[in-house]
Length: 290
Image (cartoon, rainbow, N blue to C red; front, top):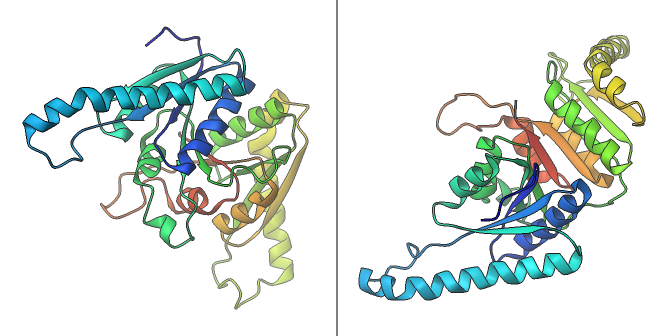
């Protein structure tokens, strides 16, 4: 592989339509950042239940076909963005491990596609995207098959208490794109069940004010560093993932933090909120690791 500049956008490519949408999004992002586009394609003969002798005979042809597939995709992206530098890599190991390795050196983003299925099935599918989001050393982007609802829409960021990483990233992306930033903070009333028991108005107003004051403190450093970004706050009672998904309806990008923790085998490795936002948001979602 060729030597790279100081920044790269890495994208995983397979033959699916959602992967192609992710590739096009990644190429646009590489152009915006002045970065190299690095495309990885995982190939293997292990999926074919054939005798080893046949696998050996077929491996060279299969590898050539995989490389031709990569080169064709690269040519398309160069035509889309003349002057864009594109690097290619055939991934010999498992797809998740290969993409994480590709992103571990100089990448600023790692991009994968998200299947366009119904909300229930998306929680059962997309193991590569889920694995990347759970373990990536750099911000990881999942691009829905529909792309972004509005390329000039706002950047939306969901901000939990004491979580500065997604805040700084979201401000930088809003500034880079020249779009406003919408900051979402939700809270839950302990005695209330959403839709069944209302929060007393006085207590709701007081909690909104408390959360807003805390949020402003968390945003202060990023506001100072990016004074040209127009910011709106959206604070209220409710489920955080629901508020962020609704806010994504006209967004160009959604930013959340990865709440990684060592948990039981069947738990969500990045936390409930980012997991659901990744699968249900209407726009590309960036998971920013701590």
